Image (tube, rainbow, N blue to C red):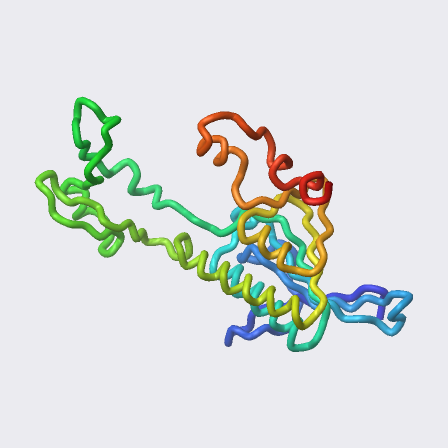
Amino acid sequence: GGLFESQELLEGPDGNLVLGKREIGTNKVGMVAWLVKMKTPEYPEGREVVFIANDVTVQSGSFGVPEDELFFKASKYAREHKLPRVYIACNSGARIGLVDDLKPKFNIKFIDEASPSKGFEYLYLTDEVYKSLPEGSVNVRQVPEGWAITDIIGTDEGIGVENLQGSGKIAGETSRAYDEIFTLSYVTGRSVGIGAYLVRLGQRIIQMKQGPMLLTGYGALNKLLGREVYNSQDQLGGPQVMFP
């Protein structure tokens, strides 16, 4: 064989990983993994390594349940076969979505209609709008105006807190990998939230200059602080912060 050979780690029909190849860019999940064999001066006969990478072209590289599952299985594969694990990180953190279809349909019951700054009692739907929504997409209670929203469920899977559960699962897996095998992370672009946790939970990090590691973006922090304190992600987690 050559100096560098690779086979993709794909999920089979039973959910277990199998080795294979597919056309580049045909993946529907924003996480990919390979079993790579490299010949180096130290290992002229070749050494196997597991590579795991975010695909930033799929929903900005965010972590949903399918991405968490592939990461988990590929990392577990590396542990079980006692192989080094390299994680190539470029992502936007856990995938938390909004039910956009509902936004223009609900109304606000203010405590004082003349003074909205005093806050609101609840968000509500008219009877007509509520009956037009897919069953189970919202939980409600009856109010004089119609139906007050208590929970927004939506109809799309994988945009809620289940992604945070998956984040905890792969953080735990990375901690186990830290103890059992060699773990290296290569931060090629921004790595946010669980993405930043994962790289830090490994043993070694290579961080590119354009690869800030952060838990929350500078725009959100400025809004929280009420003034422009930060003007870039690099101020929060750029190379000069992580390695002064």
